[in-house]
Image (cartoon, rainbow, N blue to C red; front, top):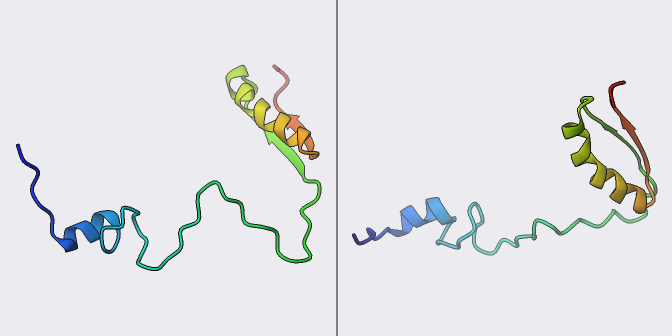
Length: 87
């Protein structure tokens, strides 16, 4: 069965104006990749952050947090994990 042809108006709703393939972008707009981090404003240093990871006292809730906590520790941040007495 052949796919029906879509007019420009239908493509604009699905893919963005002009059928760009990126929903919600218009012509001439720059799209920043999702994984690109904005630089700190001039004169601002983020420095060391103090992070608190908290979870329900269940192993399945704690284990997914550990890689994030370890990565933050390796990056030089202060990390504390809070949970219930059962862990």
